[in-house]
Image (tube, rainbow, N blue to C red; front, side, top):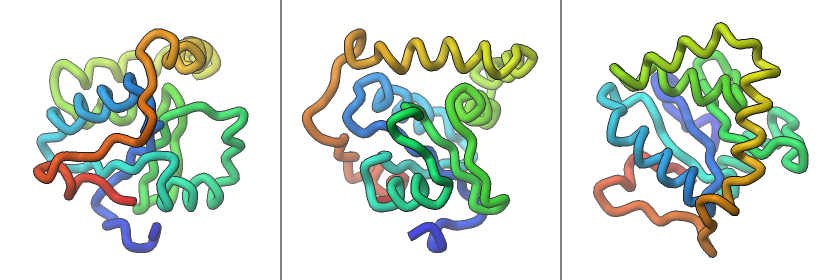
Length: 140
């Protein structure tokens, strides 16, 4: 699975049943003009493989993850979100200014939203199924 990811892409792992996460994925797809990102639910085979490879404790990490196969690296939480934003063009790329805020503060805010996302935005019973037009952006 992981070995099949093209080196010129990055994979965004997201909570497939979270309404906020699904909306965020659609936001990124719409603005990913350079076709950099692929997407996989955390609950997918690829998601589970990456979680295991990087020893992510899913009971402690409730996060978006950004996997870069070229550098074989994984970014989490606010760092992942800001790294994604920097590729989305203006005005989304302005969010990179938040890198000046210490990671522990950014992640405290991130964790607060993540902890409340189901309450605030709701939850689906199953992972999002992409439309046929978007199918090529998703991996399982």
